[in-house]
Image 1 (cartoon, helix red, strand yellow):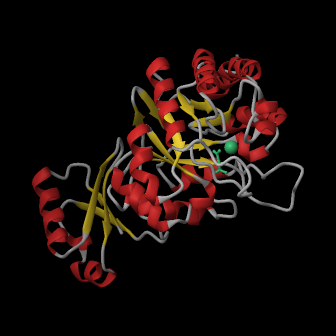
Image 2 (cartoon, protein in one colour):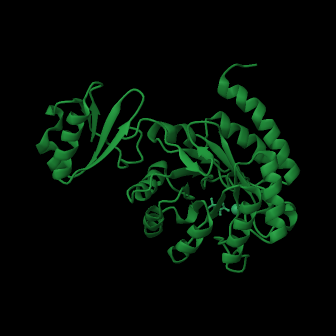
Image 3 (cartoon, protein in one colour):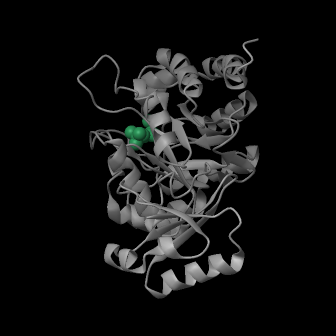
Length: 339
Ligand code: PEP
Ligand code: MN
């Protein structure tokens, strides 16, 4: 349930409403927007109807939320959320690019990539240290050594780092080194991990599950938000369909759908979305044209020698030229000037 406050409701009136509700065990989320101020209520339906909140002074109207997600919903929080990572802001403004290799493989590899992607305009560096691989015989990541190398790359370049946490057991370790915890597609519904990640209070990049509906994805975000961590960024990375030419089907319609349903920032990962480097630049342009808050792109100094996801990794040169292309037409599309 949502209470829309009257534009001239005073703070004493608002405090009284909040106090009455909290005394009844209702959780109240205050959100002040440009046009309206709302109180999002989470609590027992019977208590809420007994209180008949529409009669409180200062209340303009009461809206019943039919969606199962509340804290993630745009009706609870009408303004777009922004997630701050160092001096980078994700959401509601300039698109941000996260770039780097699928896996951290060596000091030379991660430092060379970090320098190159920074120079080309990336805002954050990615690199997996714990890798979810389909085969137990494939490279599983360097573990803590990989995290240390990422921290070294951040030290040198100033780029905040993003890395996946796969397992509640390693969460404290990963959280110690990274600026953004990535929750991978395969773990989108690992509710135990979601709750624990929520309790760290750190920014989280929550990837869409391989076969997850948008509602399931937002319910996973709800788990993190419900632990008191508002710093959630969603990342569309393609879903399983009957099409096999591309690795996944990049569901760009998720971008406007998420923006309609939720206030959370939404990024797009065209690397896992297509699985082929050739399609990364056009799908990156399309993602930004659709209104995405940013991109996550895999870049490797020598994709043919990559220990994971080589076929979908851009070379440093290709990344540089894609970034050059993106800044021009996208600025045009966003400004709507057509020049
Ligand atoms: C990755 O980012 O390298 C990764 C494994 O992504 P996803 O969880 O989307 O498959
Ligand atoms: Mn990958």
